[in-house]
Image (cartoon, rainbow, N blue to C red; front, top):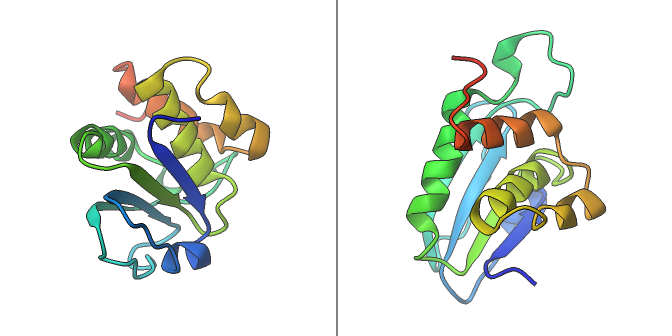
Length: 142
């Protein structure tokens, strides 16, 4: 279906993830230093980010920042031609990681490629829009 595999996992599933070809990981935790240990086998790179899974934040510090959204885009750009698979995980694998995957699909493959993630998950729309706004150059928390 996708030219690149965008694998969504929970934190627990990410620990057990194995890949026979080159892959990169986007590891999302709610707090710093809560990332799981991921396999080094065939892994080309890893981006570790910490932000909460909120849809109605009470503090700006709870949500993905513009800088983090840019980090995701830069990481994907750097790894895109080097890997066959992107592992994207968050705590449950239901909201933040599908939002990141949907935004990657949209920005790298075009409109409509993100629909799979909306049909099969419940992407966090703040995360999704933060990445798209960074992609189009419209920072919202600058």
